[in-house]
Amino acid sequence: MKRYSLKVEKRTELGKAVKKLRREGVIPANIYGKDIKSQAVQVTLKDFMQVYVEAGETGLVDVKLGKDTIPVLIHNVHTNYKENVLHADLFKVNLKEKVKTMVPLEFTGESKAVVDKIGLLMYIVSEVEVEAFPTDLPENISVDVAHLANIDEQITVGDLKRPEGVEILSDAAQVVAKIGELISKEAQEQAAEEAAAAEAAAAESAETVEGEAVEPKEGEETPSEGEQKGSAEPVTEEKAPEEKQEG
Image 1 (tube, one colour):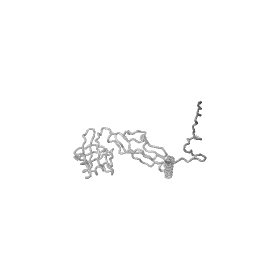
Image 2 (image 1 turned 45 degrees about the vertical axis):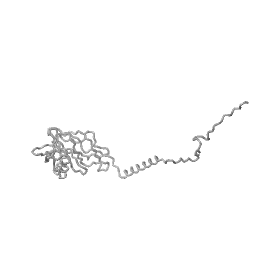
Image 3 (image 1 turned 180 degrees about the horizontal axis):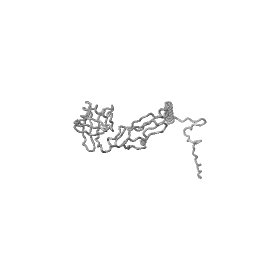
Image 4 (image 1 turned 90 degrees about the vertical axis):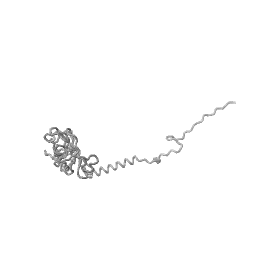
């Protein structure tokens, strides 16, 4: 496994003062680990990026701090919305102890389903968690997708070829890549039109006009005022006959 070298210096600027460092092309970093007290350090952005683009977060880096050489993994690289690096953590490792970290997947080959225009290749995950000694950590794990030829064919974590000395911790049933249905442009447009028509119909049926009278159907009469709905004639009260008094 290739090892990288990175020269850093002790850092005295803390808190908001690190903004001055960034303006000078220097980024703040921290060295930390199980058996080391956290140390504030700084490194030029140029030197850091030269190492980081190759080592990533799985490459073993020998940090040179004064007369000391500290083996680390680069962790937690913070960037701003412009993707400029703001800060990085340097995790000291024990070369005799296994570590857990995320390793990126590298997809190779061209899916037969894509070549034959049968389906669409979908990438579900881009990295997996592994455990290994620092010197055994791979830069990536290769995934060959050339054999995927039909709809719903897939590759899972359990199908990945495990590098020697590396244990993959991610769920073996997790889908890594699969072939989905190929939807034509015409089908997409038709689906959009149908959805729009259904939405318009639903809105029309739900619309009500407040205060509008209901039109009677042909042959029906509209009840006049004073009539009770459902009665043919108005209801009248009959008076009882008066009793004749004898006198």
